[in-house]
Image (cartoon, rainbow, N blue to C red; front, side, top):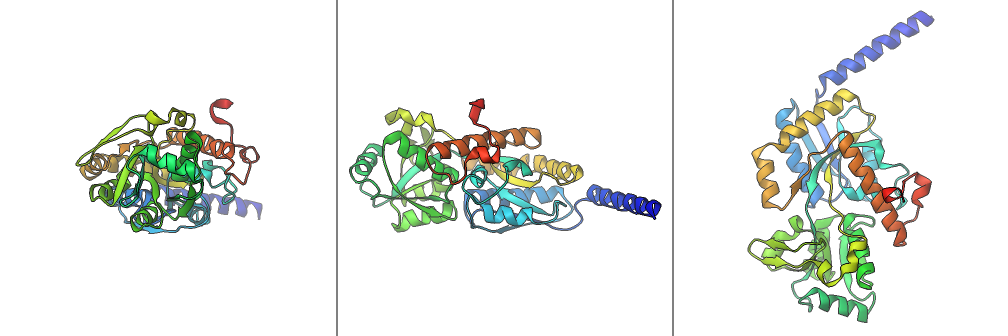
Length: 335
C-alpha cells in the first residue's frame, strides 16, 4: 500500500508540473482591488490587453472593492487556487491593509509585477474659493475639520498623502474616503468635497477641462502640465513635508507568491513583452507615468520597502489599528 501511495503521489506531482509548464491553457482573470476608472484599474486593463498578445488566452479584468486597503479584493484572490488563473490588480496602497485591520498577513504573500506610477497632485473644485495652496492652508487652519477632502480608502497612498500634508502644514481636513480615485475626483467635481488628492495621470483631463484647479504637486519638484502650465511644488511653501513625502506609486498586477515558478516565469515574460508594446509606451508618455518594469526579487524588495514606510508612517500619524510590530513589519531603514 505504501508503494502504491508513493507512486500515486509521484503521478500527481508530475501532472501538476506538466500543468504549470503548459500554463496558461484557459482564460486568466485579474481582480482589481480598487474601483473602476481609477489608476490601478486603467493600468490593469492596459496590461491585460497587451499581455494577452503574448499568451494563448485572454485576460479578463473585473473589480472587487471594499474592506480596508483593498482587503476585500485581495482576500478573494488569495482564496482562489495557486494556479495563476486569478491575479490581483494592486497598488502600493495595498501594503497598509494589515495595519488597517483588514488583512492579517504581510504583503510578501504576493509576487508583484510593477508597471509604475504617476506623481500626486492636490486640487480643489473649480468653484472653490482658494486660488493657491497658501490660501487653502490658511482656511484649513482657521477652521479645523471644516474643509472636506476626498481620497481613496483609508490607508491608500492618497489618504497617506493627505495625512502627511496635514502634519507638514499644521492643518486638519475632514477626510471623506472613496472606493477609488475616480469616485473621489467625481465627488470634487460635484462639490461633495472641496479638495481631492490623486495622481496627475488621473486628474489631467479634469484639470484641462477646468473642472478641477490644481494647487500643488506632492513632490519636491514643480511640474509642467501641457495646456495648463506649471503646477508648483507644495514643498516650496511647506518644507516640513519632506518628513513624510514624497511617496511614489507602484501600480501593477500580482500573483500569489506560492504559485508555481513556471507560472510566475510565464507571466514575467508576457509582462516584459507588454511593456515594450508601442501602445504602452505611448500611454505612459501621454499620461505622465514612469514605467518601472520590476518583477521577481526586485519587485519584492520594492514592496517590502513600501510596506515598511507606509505602515510605520501611518502608525506615527496615529492612523493604524494594528501595531506594525505585531505583523513583523520592520521599521524603515532598520530604525
